Image (cartoon, rainbow, N blue to C red):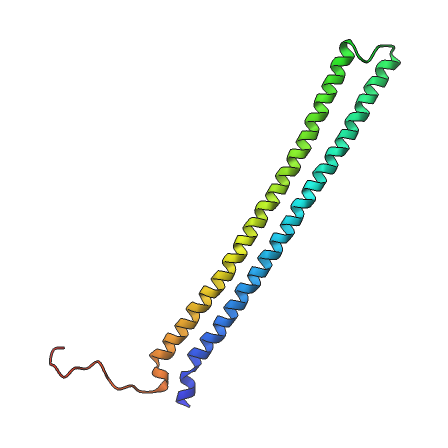
Length: 165
């Protein structure tokens, strides 16, 4: 019975180590999944920015048409004087808005890409930490087993017949 009890620390350490490895692998898988989701979000952010940019182009086109129509209705030419200034300002503001949309989309996508990178690094570190913790736990159990001498009494090998040593 004593011989079997002596193996308990070793068995316990082995089971705990296996659990830590599984935990590390699960955290790794979750991190990889989170990274994939973040990459998908980055793609969606880019697509959304492109769509909003196209929509802004369309609004700019309609705005310029309305300006030209209003000028034509009032009897003026749309290619001279203050109308030209108004059209130029509308074009500038429309392009500025379009560039803002593109930049905001790029920054959003970049944030998602950085999150994906961090998730991948964390996944790798979680897996490594699981293996390290498992190794440490197993070595601790092995040391405990070794310290118990496997349930056997070992002869005293450290005593010397020379006095003072």
